[in-house]
Amino acid sequence: MKKHTRFLMSIAGLLWMAALVVFPAAASDGIRNGLTLCGELLIPSLFPAMVASALLVQSGAIDRLGHRLNPITQRLWHLPGCSGGVFLLAMVGGYPLGARCIRSLMDEHRLTPAQGAHLLHLCVGAGPGFGVSVVGCGLFGSVRMGLLLWGSQILSAVVLSLLRRCPAPLRITGNSTGRTDGPSGCIRDAAAGMLSLCAWVLTFCSLLALLKLLPLPAGIVTALELLAEVTAGVRTARTLGSPAAAAFVLGWGGWCGHAQSAAVGIPWRGFMWYRFLHGLFAALCTAALLPLVPFDGTLPAGRPLHGAVTAVHTPFSLALLGLVAVFLLQLPVSQKNKKISPER
Image (cartoon, rainbow, N blue to C red; front, side):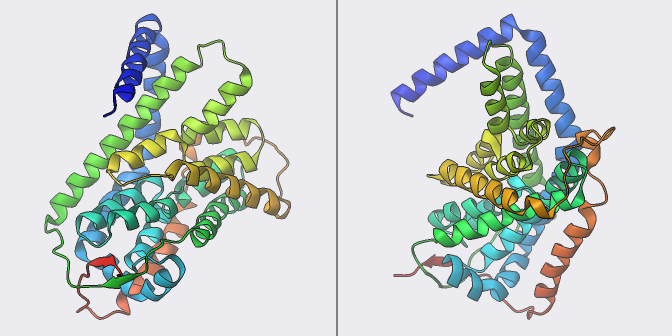
């Protein structure tokens, strides 16, 4: 760690500790809000998906799906077929799931660090449980609005990935060793990832609560809420009555989400700039298609954010998982795990 980085961290730690001593009630309120968010929204919707994704990766199902997608992913993104399976899982499970799947594939030598870093730019986004149910139904009172927001971020991710493909084409060379931790290892890994995610959310909720005590202009406070954490950001976007701002927040992912991705251990050089472009393009897509979705700016009454995860999430998730199952069942069971390396 560089000297100036340690100095900045020391200053930040001292300022934060002073704020905790002077304003303990505000910090505690922020932690309580974060715990509510984790307990009522994040853990119920993400933890089962993390366990399921770990089972799919370790069982080799992602490789079998990747065999079918390999011609597409190599031609479009210069990435191995397993990246297509990770993309589908990320779009179903939401923000941290893609990063954890990429890390698992890197550990099993099915992706190089450079490929994992490039794939991370693509596999960041809200799943239908959050994008459609929570933001669309819960905040904007419209399933079609949620579909527009969710679809805009997926379209943005795909288009930007085509504009910046992985520079080195790939070839398959040999077998990977793979991990044999079994179901207990999958649950342990998912629990560790969930704990890390919740810790970051609590940290940012507490920090935002303290920052709001400063005599900052209203515009700066709004910008911090939009940039810092996704849930606070979409709430602010709804207060502004701006679906385009909500699309930007979903594509941007928030500093909290960025920290979660960095904590997984994937190289993320240029990641934040890519996230900004992703959010900007998603906002432009939403603004362009907004005339197709009726929206009068009326706030739906009596529908708290955490209570908006309704049955809308189920059919979309089942449809995407059904697509994955069709690919898997059409492939021979004898497909072997492959190790991916850059082509020379």
